[in-house]
Image (cartoon, rainbow, N blue to C red; front, top):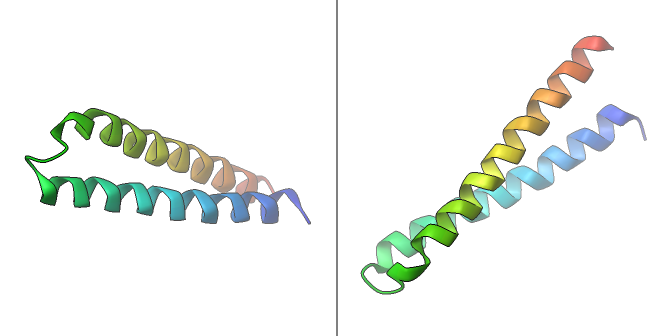
Amino acid sequence: MSDIDSLKDEVKKLNARATQKKMDLHDLSEELPQNWQSILQVAQETFDAYKTLTEKRAELKALEKAS
């Protein structure tokens, strides 16, 4: 498997994780004011997931451009 293929697989997994975190944040917002204590944690996890996804997408784009 090439570096590009493995990075595409990683991006796909990260996208699924980020989407799940987005849904977790959405679900939490619908439950408010219950579980309000977890807002910061869930928001940080969502932020981190999308940050990592964005970085890996940029890495993939650069690798594809170099090929």
